[in-house]
Image 1 (cartoon, rainbow, N blue to C red):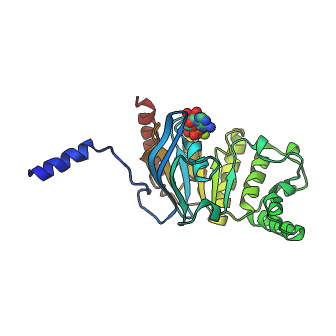
Image 2: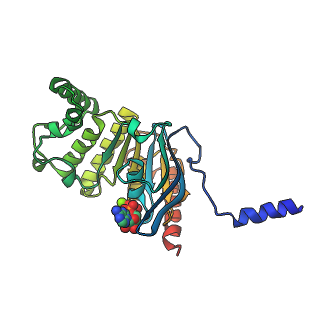
Image 3: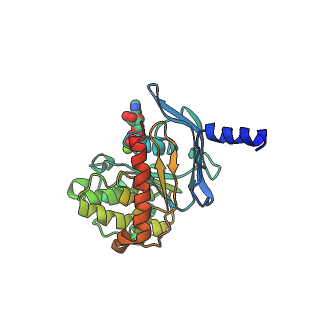
Length: 278
Ligand SMILES: Nc1ncnc2c1ncn2[C@@H]1O[C@H](COP(=O)(O)OP(=O)(O)O)[C@@H](O)[C@H]1O
Ligand SMILES: [Mg+2]
């Protein structure tokens, strides 16, 4: 072995293991995050963090509690400021990009004094879209998505699932390039969660919008995703970023599909390794 080879070997051992920012098969990126740094009161959440989110794909983010999943999508979507680093959407800044965001807590997400219709149309109103045109846009979106819901009712008259559906439509009305969802179904009961997964999967297939979902439910994360972004403990890094090569639409049979089961258990192993790492 030459000295150069020995040095290179040593360097490889000493260098921190860094995953490529793109998922395993490296499709074209829609969102690129480079050199992200974020801390809260001295606690570093992200340090020199890079990630690519592929275009038109569904990415689920999964990782240990408090590792920075919500923080990551909040940073990318501009809800909280970066300390340093860069986020680009097709090379454009956030200000030049239309994004949608669906919050975890649907009870606080909708305006209680507005009907479902007015909640969905709100962003159009803000943009000064004339009433008739806004009406037509909402009608088209609802018809396109095949959502069966009475748009004249108020949030208090809706189930949790209906409120989240309205939240999703409200985010989609501006035809976003990217839709972010932070544990959107976590406050719903199991039956409604299963129903909403199907709705979201259908909406994803209908719109082809790039979607980034934070989930604390590994089965849900894998079931919905084209790629699962597994994060390490803080400071956050990519633990793995596997592709989910299972045809859509996915259904109950998917849950028993050997490829699904294997991938899910691999993800679980990585997750548990991260949780145990001190
Ligand atoms: N606004 C904030 N101020 C201070 N600490 C925060 C703030 N937001 C999040 N944190 C902390 O940052 C860490 C990551 O939070 P978060 O991204 O919400 O984690 P999760 O992966 O569970 O979504 C946690 O330790 C959390 O307490
Ligand atoms: Mg969170």
